[in-house]
Structures are given as structure tokens and as C-alpha cells.
Amino acid sequence: MGDYRRSWEDEISRAADEAYEKEMDDINRQLKQEILIAQIGDVNTGKSSTMNRIVGEEVAGVGAEPGETTEIKPHKYKEHIYFMDTPGLNDVNTANSEITLKYYKQADIVLFFLNAAGTVFSEAEKKSFEKIQDVNSNILIVLNKIDAADEIDRLVARIKKETGGHYEVAPVSSRTGENIDRLRSSILEMLKKKSKDILFAKSIKEKSATANGWIIGASISAGAVGASPIPGSDIIPITGIQVSLLTRLAVLYNRPISKETAKELVIATIFGNIGKSIFRQIVKVFPGAGSVAGATVAGATTLALGYAVKYAYEHNIEINTANITKLYKRYREKAETETESESESKSESK
Image (tube, rainbow, N blue to C red):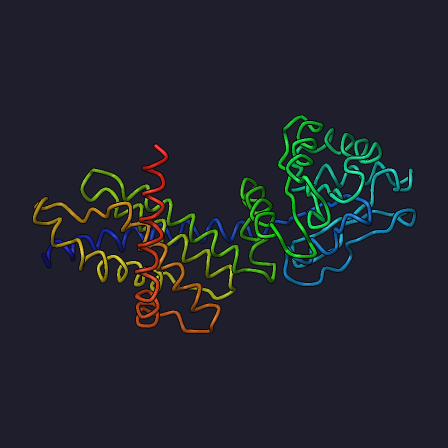
């Protein structure tokens, strides 16, 4: 047992080192880039209030008034992140229309705002949409004020039909906060394709929902790997998934984590928990092989580790093996229940 454990600890240690270096290289590249998020929509579509909800604080420079927009230029939100706002291309001074379209072309994301309680997708809005669509297809349509409107599903279906079904339509309420987390996730998903999601997530004040999304995503990935029928084939990739999650959470909360700490936490998680419950049984069945973590165990372990670290960051608890192990135990049972329920749901759907 001791030899097997030492052997796998060495393998995990090497895998953790590689995963940490790879993830930090990617993160450092991201943090040097710039993000431009362009917003277009009439003043009554609630751009300012929606952006405030998304980032978790007041955003200056959003909410241009019709008729007074003579010059369009990006407004700096945080280092490397810029927002640009227009009330509608028809309200932009003709002399600046070319410059405005140039910015829209460069934008990483265009948030196209519509008012669910108004005249949804008016002729003026259609013309603005078509102009932007010609220069940039990275459009996310935000249907705001759903709390003041009826038949939202019908509105969403109509918007999708009129825009060719090529774009996501996000129905939200900036007043109540309904679906704001989903909108934020959609923005991060679009930025992820450009390898810029970590930069945006790190810069905004609202972090909890993003952290939860990353933790659940890592848990699902670990569960998929853990379902592998090949003995020992899961340990190395699960190590990579967990180390990647730990480094992302550290950057998200602006609390750097060292390679050694990340490695210690993963090893403690695997051998302190999976080892106790599964390792001995597996060695009996597959002498000489490593530990096979089933989908439920792999997913639950990753979920619990993620929530434990998140809790520590949000409550200013030092990240070390002793503290995280205590917090981990608190989340482990709950995590196993969640992943078991998810596995059962998937089985039933098949």
C-alpha cells in the first residue's frame, strides 16, 4: 500500500507541476490582453443598470443619451478593459459613423440591448443591428426589462427568427436581477473563445457566481474522466483539472496560490479522501494498479475542493492544507449527494 501510494504521489506531483505551469502561462497571457465590450441600445433599454449588475458595481461612461452623442470612444473600466456605448447608430453624428463602426468591428463582444416592455426590434433597431452584423458577428442580444413584460418566450422566439437564429438572446431584468448570472456566464463563455474570460472575471467585483460556474464545470469534467474503466487512467487528468481550478480561483479572487500549495491540496484531497475510501479496495482488485475514482467520487471530490477554497477566499481564511481539509469535509457529503443526483438524472434521461 505504501509503495503504491508513494508511486502515485510522485505521478500526481509531476502532473500538478505541469498543470500549474501550463495554466499560469495561459493566465499571464490573458492578463496582458485588452477587452472591448461594445453596447448598443436606446436609453430606455437599461444598459447602465444591466452592466452594473453584471460587474457588481457602478460603471461610469455607460448610458449615452440620444441626440447628444457626437463622438464615440471606448471608456476605460479597469486596466485592459473598455466599454463603448451608443444609443443607436442612427443617433451617432454622421461624421463619426465610420469611426464608430470601426470600434464595433474591433469589439470582442457586442451587447445589443432591447426593451421587452417597449417596441421590441423596431425598424431603427433592425437597421443598427444589420450594420453591426456586417462588421462583427460576436453579438449577444440582451432582452431587458422582462419583469415588465408578458410572453417573454414568444418575444425571444421572434427576435431569434428575425435575426436568423444565429445569436443568443438573453432575457434579463436589471431591476430584479433575474437571469443576470446567466448573462454574465454567456459573456464569459464568449470571451473564453478568445482566451479572455479570466481577465474579465478577475476585473469585475461580482465573483461568486463565476466561481460557482467554474467549480461545477471542473466537477463535471472530473466526473467524466473518473468514469473511465481503465484502472489508474483518471488520476493524472483529474490532477490537471483540480490544479487548473485552484489557479483560476486564486486569480479570480486576487489571492495568488503557489505551485507547492496547489500540489499539496490536490495530493491531500486524493489521498486524504479518495485514498481512505477507495484506494485499498482498488489495490485488492487490481494489484499493481492505481486508484480508479468513479465518476461520483471524482466529481464530488473536485466540487468539494472548489467550494472549500472559494469559501476560504471569501472569508479571508489562509489557504493551506489544514484549513482547506477542514472546510473540505464540510462540503464533501453535500457534493457527493449533488453528483449522485446528477448521475441518476443522466441515467434516467438515457
